Amino acid sequence: MKNANPSTQSAMAFIDREFEIGANYQRFDQRNDIFSRAIWDPSVKPKNFFKSYDVANYQPKKSKGFDHWDYALRNASWHLTDVVAELKWHSEGKVEGFTNYYSIQTPGPKVKAPELSLSETTSRIKKAARVLGAGDVGICRLDRRWLYSHQFQRKTGTSAKLDLPKHLSHAIILILPMDHRLTQTIPSALGGTTTGLGYAASLNVANALAQFIVNLGYDAVASLNDTALSIPMAIQAGLGEYGRNGLLITSKFGPNVRIAKVFTDLPLQIDRPTRFGVKEFCSICQKCANACPVKAIPGGKPQVKPPNFSSHNAITKWTVNAEKCFKFWVGMNTDCAICIRVCPYNKDYSKWWNRLGFKLAATPLRKMMLWLDNLMQFEKRLSPIKWW
Image (cartoon, rainbow, N blue to C red):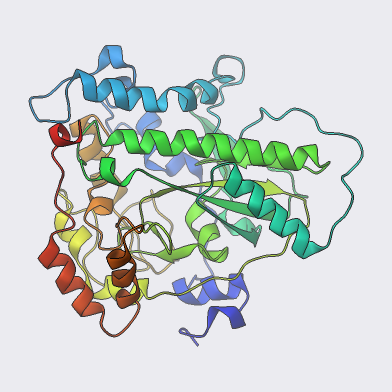
């Protein structure tokens, strides 16, 4: 039953079987994610990591990719996301998009738009999402197990129960591809630019789509990292599979993506989970685990017990050690995505040979695909100087 066709199962049943979710599963408290712990937990020392996103406090290094130009571009890519995130920081202590969902939508009309069929409504929403900038889009029923139990307020260091309106029934999951060539320069401050650009695109698409739905007379809430776990919802919405590196491996862009969400009461057709061999491929591939400088990525089989309380319990999966991972980020003063850069699924899929490799990875010939990937050295780091 574990390998049953996803189309024959409900999305909830599929994910229950895939990850063997235990009866003692509990919703995650946002206070315990590694970024929140950096605020209140003395064992997690952020040092100058957060300060470095103000370019006046950057700390240049001799390593290529960490000079003034590199930090200036990285921080510029984050500028709009950070400004919008802190609009209500002083008045309400919110960091929208990271600890709180967005509240920047303007009111819609009192009368709803003329009703269409469910399929036509869904088609139009997906078309709107794509024209607004999403690389891919999927829809699932809102599985409230993935909502945080509590939201963390960084300003006061306190938590409060999540207040997402109960009538919101669906989640629209948005995939935003990141810049492949910039990702190749990771680890570097320059490479962190691809993350900032991904968040800026996510901010725009999620809020624009939410406003479109509000304009139709329905309720919609835009969300990035806040409010809920994005990866299980994306899996339920048929947008990808879970990889050894703890990331969503999408069928169109591999792992080199950001994920945004829009919660809504607009009636929509749901998508079904999909399979294209990621679990089978990751079981024979160790590239991300071997390349991780601090060995934060497990090399063995999926386990139910997480390495620390910054990850879920009662879910059988590969779980990245967030404490080790974040410590490396702090040491570099920028985010790291080596696990994305070296992943055989991280390719420029505008090239036919990469699309062919993707198809090989889904077949019993996956070992050949891995051999070819090693031979071609696709994971090799691009010098930041060459990027400039």
